[in-house]
Amino acid sequence: MVWETAKQSDNNYKNTWGYAQLLEHIDIGILVLDLNQEAIDYCNAAFFEVLQDEQLCRSYQGLYNLFVRDIEALDDFDLAGRVAHQVTHQGRLFGHSVYKVASNYRCVFIRDITEKSRLESIAQAVNTMDNIGFIFSGIRHEIGNPLNSLKMALSVLKQSSENIRPEMLKEYIERGLADIGRMEYLLKSLKTFTMYDSVDLKDMHLVEFMDKFISLIERDFHSHGIRIKTEIPLDISRVRIDERALHQSLFNIFNNAAEALKEQQAAEISIQAEERDQLIWLTISDNGCGIYPEQLKYLFQPFNTSKANGNGLGLVITRKLLAMMRSDIDIVSQLGDGTQVIIRLPTVDAVASKT
Image (cartoon, rainbow, N blue to C red):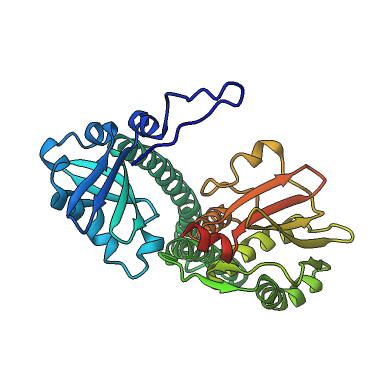
């Protein structure tokens, strides 16, 4: 193979760093297999450093079985091969992608991601433990308070069962039922948090989805004096979403907006959408009371809430559901000047190109 070198325009000097030299000095292992000859056609220096297994490095069949065979068996190999895959060998984790260079050649890019995976696992474990700590602390508080109140009410009723007045009995029963309702509400929220173990992604028109969603909530919001205004281009790209998960996410966001719009004159929620870089930026804005700056950084922590009857799980659930749909959420707010919630949803074309 003849490697073309770069030319300098001023004196036609041929640079000594050609393509071959470049491949020899990058830190990614590169392997080319000839399927017809069942031979290793090319590998760079980093290939040996990454694998650190001389016997495997010289075995065509071993390399083919480890990095190529299972991926090539896929129906959509031409697309699937380009996605990063992972394989374990001798206790080490390798990330690799396979490209079909020609009908009988396969080019494999290989990196050792053992340490990277270990550090990510540690970070994820720390983050999980932090969240579990928040959750248990919140559960202890959210269930402990109504449970103590209920216990106190029952103790009073037990001690005064013979002399208690009917109106006092009714008061204590209502208080007990209210406490039970608070605990039921918490358990229902926790169930919502865990019910979406997986999502069923489908291609949908955002306009069609939003029409359905708004038709479900509009009457109730209008009855509370809240106007909903929508501006979504009819020709906007389709998105790949789980309809139930996005519905639950938006429902949580709209509930928060309704809370912020209480006693607000000319209360309004506006919905806008635009396409940027193969993402649909869906913005939900309200002209409510806004959020205190010190509260903004804790919005996605479990059981962090400023609502009298809230449990602080709504936005946690929302971010989880959006992440499962490869989407994300940002919240921008100024105290006294309303709140903007920005959701970025991948378009169908974006998902297809990444695949």
